[in-house]
Amino acid sequence: VADIGAGSGYITIRLAARVGPTGRVFANDVQPQMLQMLGRRLADKHITNVTIVQGTIDDPRLEPASIDLALMVDVYHELSQPQAILRHLRESLKPGGRLALLEYRTEDPTVPIKPEHKMSVAEAKLEVESEGFTLAKVDEALPRQHILIFTVKP
Picture 1 (cartoon, rainbow, N blue to C red):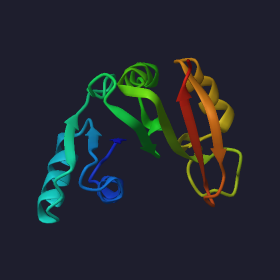
Picture 2 (picture 1 turned 90 degrees about the horizontal axis):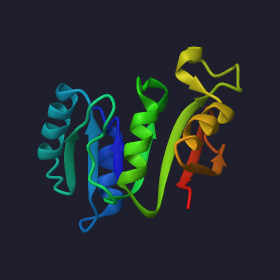
Picture 3 (picture 1 turned 120 degrees about the horizontal axis):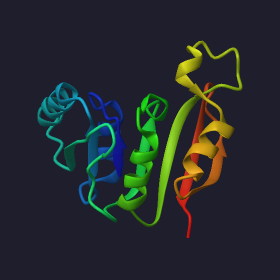
């Protein structure tokens, strides 16, 4: 599993527990300071199934066909070069792999987040599908965010 935009590791640490000792999490971020902070947290918690990966604004720098799931929690809307990132992520996914985006809902005006930090399902679908993905599932179980699951087009 790749945690894209891992930051200080809130999601990464939970993913590491979820995949277990035989699984692997790639904690990816463009900010070296965040990755250093995450490295200290991992060491303090004796978590050994996480690999820290310094990405760039246009390339997460993950190996081809190396991940089953790429996860972005409130990250996609912040990307300055989303199409390049999506192309690289598509290459990094194994056959049958998935891309999951969690984004605050534009469609709900009561969500107390600035509009530039929200995305609609239609916006995400248009942008992500143009890079070789198919929207497979929209989960609205969270009170303020969409969970959008994409698969690679065959």
